[in-house]
Length: 343
Ligand SMILES: NC(=O)c1ccc[n+]([C@@H]2O[C@H](COP(=O)([O-])OP(=O)(O)OC[C@H]3O[C@@H](n4cnc5c(N)ncnc54)[C@H](O)[C@@H]3O)[C@@H](O)[C@H]2O)c1
Image (cartoon, rainbow, N blue to C red; front, side, top):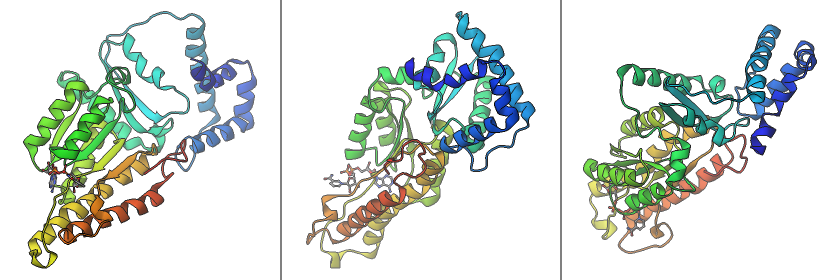
């Protein structure tokens, strides 16, 4: 409550007679707002608003906010409500965004990477979500479980509550185990694998602990399919918080005896699969402005030479090199409120 009070302190200023009007009319208020937009991940070019707009906004605050603060009553609604909650909102604490569900019968909650000004800096994804909401309501479709409120997600776990993790190679082994661990900690998983039924099973098991996981059958060597996957994830869940490029295959044996097809297959899967994953998801994570994590599964073979793993080592060393370089390139990108954002 204290944190929210600090973030809402401007509302008190709006309530003082005459002062805010003087700020808007003198232009100081407009400059201050443009500054706030810049640091809060707003559009590069601040909006040019007419003084009348500022004064209308002020009147809205006075008519609605102050009166409700002084005479709070419980007002429930049966009208479906969708909350689009940016991950880095400078003015709203997390609880305020998600707790509205307590007073709404049909509450749909979507978290997306972005800041308070995302409606103007990234209107397309916001508009897409609004369109999808209208379509869901008009079609009478039941509320999808992946629209978990942050509150519900928190009940299921801790550190990754409410987050979305895309994991390739999630149908088996390390990918599946990672999916389980993240789901256990509250994340919803997009389980991706070339083996569709295996991915389905991972998603179904993840949903038992944190509802809202889904499976996608995608071959990571297919660039177009990976980009289509990224677009689907953005539409369904918003920009993911974590992408794990984990799908990989092992090829063992003397390098000189490997066929060209074998070599192409291992490079396509282990290296190109990671490249496609990064190129499909990283731009939206940077543009989203909320940071995020990209994890590429390499191997001890990235460092250790071996007589039997020449081709495999080559791909894994390349994945390590790429990941280290990307870490430098992306650190701090697109995350205005967290300069130390890691990639
Ligand atoms: N198991 C190990 O000891 C070990 C050690 C170091 C690194 N790794 C790496 O960890 C990752 C996972 O290995 P694992 O042991 O869990 O393997 P695994 O074979 O158990 O799982 C890999 C999954 O990736 C999927 N996959 C393969 N090709 C794909 C493609 N083109 N598109 C989409 N999915 C595809 C498979 O269907 C499978 O479900 C790999 O990158 C591997 O190189 C494994």
